Amino acid sequence: MKKVLFLTVLALAALDAGAAGDTIKVKSRVMEATIFFSGAEVVHEIDAQLAKGVNNVIIQGLSPDIDVNSIRIRANNGVLISSFEFMVESVATDGEIKVLQDTLERYQTDLGKIRSILRINDNLLKTLQNAVDKGADSKDNRSEDIISLIEYYDKKMKDTEEYTFRLRQDEKELTRKAAETGSRIQAVKNRVVRDKGALKLALSSSATTRCTFSLMYYTPSASWSPYHDISVSSIDNPVKIISKAKVMQTTGVDWEQVKLKLSTSVPSFGKTAPLFTAWILRQPQTIVNRMNDRSDPMMQNTLSYKRLQIKEIDTNGEQAEQENLILPAETMEDHVAVSENHLNVTYDIDLPYSVPGNGNIQNIELQSQEIAAEYKHYCAPKLSPNTFLIAEINNRENLNLLSGNANITYEDTYIGETYIDAASTKDALSLTLGIDSRVAVKREKVNEMSSTKLLGNDIKQEYTYKITVRNNRNTPINMVLKDQYPKSVEKQIEVTLLKNTTTPTFHNEDVGVISWEEKFRQGESRTYNISYSVKYPKGVVLNLP
Image (cartoon, rainbow, N blue to C red; front, side):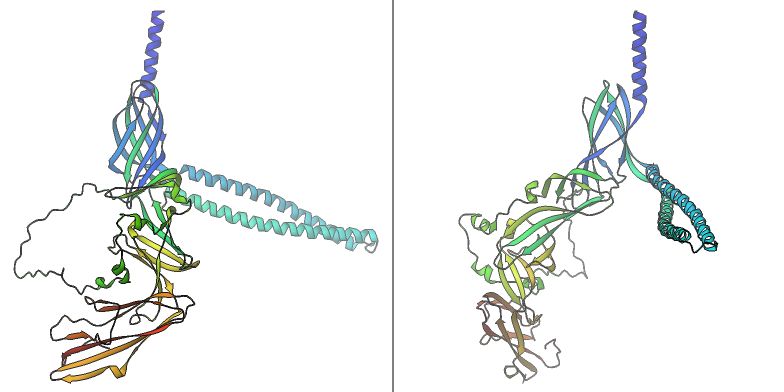
């Protein structure tokens, strides 16, 4: 009895040793993915039945584009990961060929049936034709029985011919499909194989067990980018902003019903913050400090100055800023948790999404919000005679918008695309909603107030322009009108704004831009003047009008 028991134990041990020595091939399922602006961290889940001892496991069907240094593996049930090796396998396309071959066989079977019926019909038509010919040659071809028989055969022939015609069309279509499928099979055979990633593991288990473990890694073959849909129903309503994401991945592995996180962070991969080295000046180098160059054209990129002048300070902290916000109804954002730290923003989506591995873009809505806006009409007639309707949103930081393109719709009409720059230092977000032809602006030179004079070795020219604005709308508007005079960076060229005839609301001397910001009643018309003089030496050619 003891001998039998001893032999049984040896046999079980041998079975365990044999099972542990076999290579187990398993598939994995993508469970989670954290997608960055460039790249993604992907989490797979794997189940495997392990024997006691060392088990060799190969996880197949992974992306071939994996950063090996980022691979992390976790196992349960006390299973130890002795070693792992990432490799790229050549996976045969037998499965794809099998599907195509089954389709081709179905087409060929249908073709065989059709051609068999066509042969029967051909014989039937010959028989019917012979019967008609015999009836026509009969001595009794004028009898009612013969005439009825001929008519019957004739009708039968016509029905058979129509049926045969339809069968010929079906035969032609099936022949085309069969040939096309045959070509696809050949094309797949020419490809033969495609690369897939695989992970070879050595797992040590103290007992026979089913192990569930996770695989995490970084792949550069994924990305997402933010964009926005902005809509305004009328200038009496707030602006609605829907923030969305374009998500794509080209790992070659389809992500089916995966939990997604979208992050604005960018993995650094060992990058360090920069440090200065010595800055040595040697002739003939010339160092120019342009920080004080106040002619920078970006300094004029402010639509309205009035808002900056009258901005009130709220003693209750953020309360006044939040008053502009209007809480939206339940939308997609109820399924998106937004978290923010000092470095990035993360959108945690609790609805599962499928993202194909072929690079097809998936559009995901992140959040929807409405915010009050100040609507203004803007025109710079020196640059364009058109008057633009502008929506200005104050306290833009409350929106927490990311940089990206924005599609604008006004009164259910698509206006075009703009760009939202989250890094902008402006307090307000300005959106151009389109051209309003009902606000007319005309700029013309006033010749009687313009002149050219000789002053010794110098020439002095004076320019005056009249700008006429008329509000042809049936509602009041807030109008922002801008114009410009030249600036000089040379001592011998003097430019003077003639303030006795030029009375703007705001004057930006740094870039030579003046503004009038006033409210117009319906049907109201006003005129404005801009006058300036330019004094310069004779013989100097300037880009003056």
